Length: 190
Image (cartoon, rainbow, N blue to C red; front, side, top):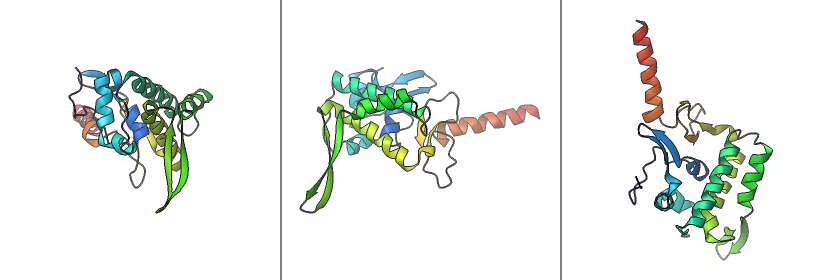
């Protein structure tokens, strides 16, 4: 079933861009889903407020080149997130292959210092920005990049809780299911 234009069907959409790209795949009661399995899904992802902000208003083409590049970046992030604090050589190579298609530059404007992003083609911009954002998370707090504590969930999150003890992609979803399972197990023992 194709995504409804303007509606993001994913259960978790408020994570940083690098993690948000990983979360374009999810599992729910209806089964496995991949938002990036079509150009309609790509359009829905690109239209989201998080992605629009990250791209700085620069339009990314909704075409097969952009989709292919995003899937390459997502695969690289999949490898890197397996061990955020110590990515293996293949993960490093895969992420660097995406990052090689763009760069961030510095310049001085009349109102002060600024930065800009330059990519080989506009179709690289979303993939490059997602990879760049993941590097930002690694530089800030790599130990806060986590997978959901529910073994049946494939979502990731960046833990911004004060004490750094978040376990679930969301309390409303996986967290409540875990609490309900514990409650059921206690009741069954009684």
